Image 1 (spheres, rainbow, N blue to C red):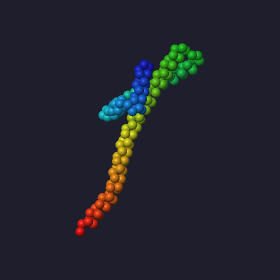
Image 2: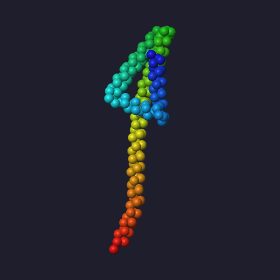
Image 3: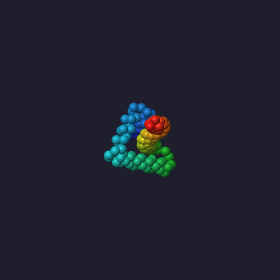
Image 4: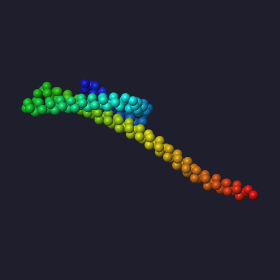
Length: 153
């Protein structure tokens, strides 16, 4: 189980790194995350996240039960010590994996918002540039029109 959790944590870290830096892979990851958040995707993600959370709480409960046994016995049993270390490693990997999943979700959200805001800023810049162009050309056109009118008898 620990090998699977290490693989999951490393995959999540690679996903976060691909989201942080502007690479061709980033666009592919964003499209994949967009598609996973459509249709039944959110339901699947929530159910998997809930299952992992239940598994996390079960592992924490197991750690506390082993710790209680150790304190009641008064001496350290080598088997309980190995079991405790295994469960602590498992719990920390699951917790870290859940945390990284939350980080991935927030990064995806902020990247999408940043893209929308950049598009709006470009739109406003274009509108401002068009407005300035109209203001600068309008007086010249008015002068030309008045000169043309004054030339007509």
